[in-house]
Image 1 (cartoon, rainbow, N blue to C red):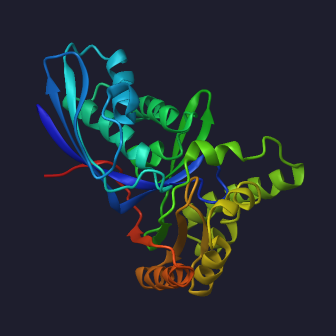
Image 2 (tube, rainbow, N blue to C red; image 1 turned 180 degrees about the vertical axis):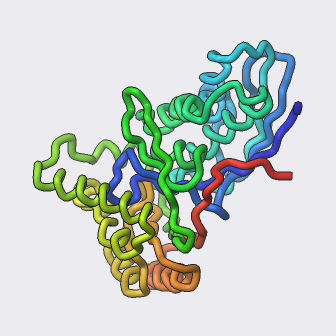
Length: 307
């Protein structure tokens, strides 16, 4: 192949209790990218539609991630990349991760897959480093592996795919304000109490167990964040009310998607997920803040080729 077109999914990171280690891919929300081989060495961003983002290679996450792959590759040519953004920058559902992973996944396909998925995660993390100042993997890992993923370790990098219950659906509401990941990281505490740590570790273990056993009640009980959410929720207007209404509408649990401002909820079944969406929308209608809403099943494939 000389050219490939791919769908790059949006992702929910942290998943309440799993700051920087848990993430999940969405199925019907994402970007589209076209990547083609060129004889000229290096990477060029030739088109970028949907968002006002830099097209210079070293200032674009797709360019930086792609260069990380090229550095480790024997390929003597280069690539051109077209990016069609449907995920808004600063939305909290993995906009930078979609571009980073889409670029390296497509390049790897065009080169007949010389790199493993884990290696692609490492390359994509360089795009995240550019976007947020930290090379975190909780968005890029599910985008590449699909479904839920656990970053068991960063040094050495160890990604564990997690089973996804078939009837689990996500509802995500994005109030039309921007919260930069780099800014939202600055307000976090660098030290936590042992008591909070114990609660959080218990919830991470409970969530993983609930996903593998398809115990929806356990999943719901485990979607609690005692460390990050109390701080970051201050940046999101109406967060507590949205969470309360989502739970009343039947959501298993609700929390901040990534660094925000998007808020996610998990539900058992599409009907409940749609009811949760209606409840969330009412809150922002009353506040007077514009919003986008996505209802999606979990994407078990990750990035995929499209026609």
